[in-house]
Image (cartoon, rainbow, N blue to C red; front, side, top):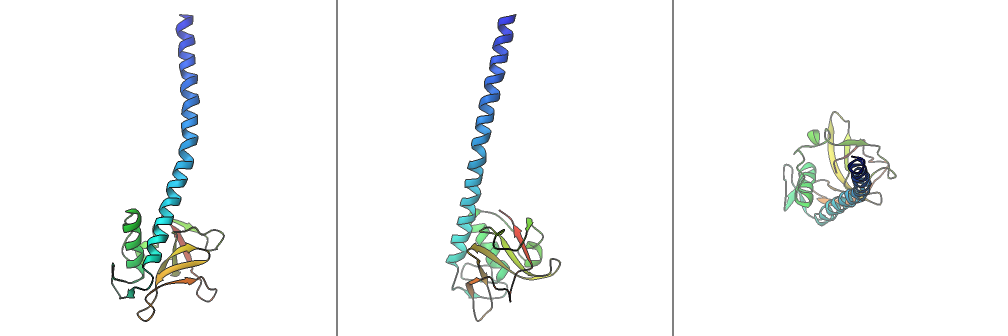
Length: 156
């Protein structure tokens, strides 16, 4: 009976040890996966620079602002986000709008939380990609204190 007890205790300790080891390995793998997703979103967003702005367009040759964000997330990482700026702002985790807090792939919104009028994708280095206007098309710009986003959302 004592030998069975020892074996069971040994098995329990073995399982606990290797379970803890595998759990610690999972966290970095998840972080790498999130980083990979963010980088894919940024890469595809940057590839859209220069394309036309057309109100209501969802790609792949022209976009409006929320059509661009929806297209990029779907094609880059197979993540479905809603179609309009108004509904996109309701998704994800709210993030403080500061270059120190923003991460690649965060959605940036202009206007109030209840009534946003524009959305873009943060690509790092204080820059974002957005479908600006019919005359400007899709472009990459620096965040500006004169046109600072009111809200940011993390959906990755």
